[in-house]
Length: 251
Length: 251
Image (cartoon, rainbow over all chains, first blue to last red; front, side, top):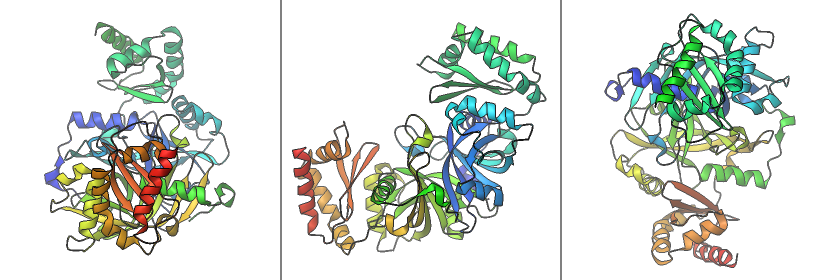
């Protein structure tokens, strides 16, 4: 890998936060795989979700080029960060090198991934159980981020994966936490979105909870709210949600 | 390459037109290359232009991962077609397998590529002459297009390249045709954009002309107007422009 020292900036906390936001708030990305037979690096578009430790998830058809490719060679990269208006190169984006692992339906992690993915992409419920579709977990190996012209950073796997002893416990709590927040605290997701995510819209609901933050959803939009620090035990989740609401109300 | 017959539709003229529009109207795309050293398929974002025969052009820094990669292995793919609102997988996109060729500054084609690229991306004028930047011509080999869920097509190089004996002659005429149209027929680009491209905006100017169509530009937007048939000689260009104006005025 080329590391042209004079153009790569030191990876600081701001860069790590931006990198995580790009990966974790994405609805979709461009995936690059090595096409069997031709050997071409082949790029296509995939919806993306997140596993409980921050690793991207994809749900793809066995009839696609990328399924064949990933089964033959697990090396893949994912480009996150979509340009809005203006110069496309002024918008930050990140290329994450990943190793793909196909998740079997009888894998204990499958139900959790399925639930999290559908919460993020409700329309995927239409085909998630088709026999030719499968989840792949895309474990980050390293990444190159471009925060705009001349702002290049290199990141390591650890910068993108969530590090906490509470990952499994928070995953257990997630479904009830989401149901409780959306049913018993209507308006809180809108409050988070307005104050913490600068959204001018209403209609947000909570669709994901993990040790490092919250995912909010509003029709076809997603928003990621990152905690300052990952939770170190599941019991901190409730305190954190209350803290965020209080902080947001005071703003 | 996998060709799952039951999911691939026959490539008809509508599919070819959509494929050309996706490639030729793009401001940018995701490029996949094979990264030297790691062997990973690496995806990043590039601005794209068009050579006079419809082959995509990119302008990239020698300090980037993709320059090193393309010099070591010219196989690359380009994903075109950006999602707007709604389901990202409902928006058409195309993955074009290409072979990259670096264009030296003393190549006779360089000045033409430079002019066409800057006409499309005026801000690229700021760095196009930096010594570490270079154009690569990305000659299409084949493509997979996805026109929306379940609408997959395979395309050949010939579906994406412009076939005409007049390519070089029209390229000669291009600068004066653009200058003439924008200076002497103000409003004509707006007329084309409104009637042929369903734009509600004004402020369009002509920024490219080739045997197969016109490129219109409006700040950060591009629009491609394809002719029904490619011009077979350069003298047909004026007639075609007049014909399009007449057709548009009658609408």
